[in-house]
Image (tube, rainbow, N blue to C red; front, side, top):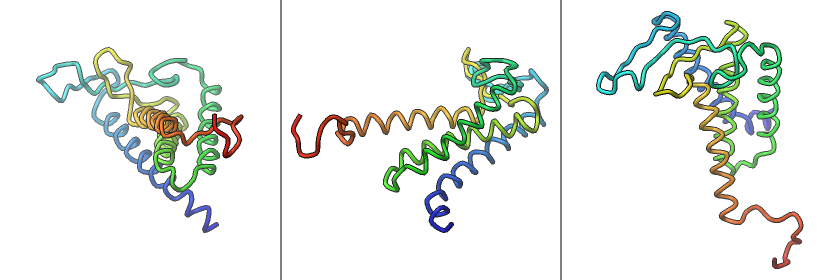
Length: 170
């Protein structure tokens, strides 16, 4: 148990922080804005950046509206996959660990909304981009960090060709 907690402490610490910030920001929006109401906090840029309370009954960025139970199962499977994949990460793979932690926190943050409210609270509106929330941002950043890690490892040659035998020149 001690080994499990030591290996997974970082995952649960970051994911919990994401979930708490996500849920707090969503609660603030629901308490202070009516559904569909917007607030532009930076007058100099007008409506380009605003907080807009919206209820998302689909997947990320409003896709697959009203897909209900299917999306719930997919979200749960993704969270489980992230936890299982994290078990295979090495201690030195900090970028991978951060990315998985952010993705797990984001996935669970939106699952909390789905189970408690029946929809996901979205509220960040930038230009014409679909409305999103802190959890969505963390998932997106996590995926970006994972891609960055893959690029770095590829560039540094840390990923070997499975056909290549150790000590053999390509």
